[in-house]
Length: 120
Image (tube, rainbow, N blue to C red; front, side):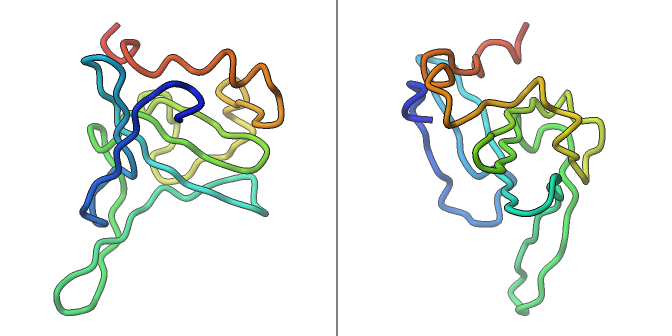
């Protein structure tokens, strides 16, 4: 994100629905990050710990985050929440239009435009 010229902030609460918030000027967006090394998909569920030591699993819903960053090196898929076809499972092959190859120098000179487009 820094190479794409966004300021990035991490929440203090590990149970929040976002992993990062990004800012450029007066505009903000929230990001959820999921990674995979072997599969061509990511699961969209989050766990929240309770005081009793047990955890509860939640599905994400609209408003929880603005963008999913699904990472399977060397690609990062930057998918707006509103473009997700399934809110609990993301097959990466369905989102090639949102993929950025981290080995390609073009990726760093032409970053995704994350701020502003949410309000268009």
